[in-house]
Image 1 (cartoon, rainbow, N blue to C red):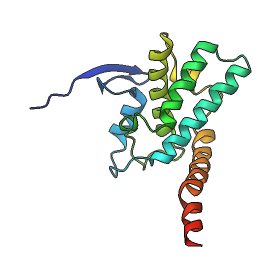
Image 2: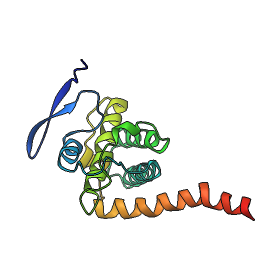
Image 3: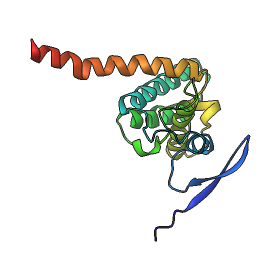
Image 4: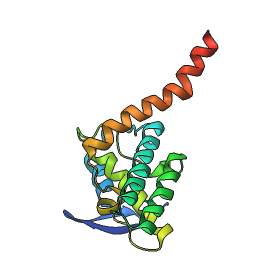
Length: 164
């Protein structure tokens, strides 16, 4: 029998169990629990685009002296790991979720914050640091466009060139 171990996470809605090895936190776990609709998760290219956005936002926030350099650099490194396609199993949110994509945005914030905390050796907040100056209504539509552009360059244009 395979027994799953858990840790207790807390957010504004209270405590809940999250798998001990998960890089995500309470917000993501709530999305998993509340939206078990299709079993389909967001495409890898979309998650990578979110990583690009989070990395760019951290760089801008550091340049504006809004984000301390050690925390910002840790976010840049952690988001880079997402861009590289690492940690994909930690993005389990169903593709059918809230209308603005808040669950996916928070999933990325939590994963990047946990990775960045390990890199920086100090607490990195998913909201105050990783999501600084952003909203789901900024991140998700931008990620849709960025991931589409990336896929066009990676797959469609080479296929069209080959076809021609």
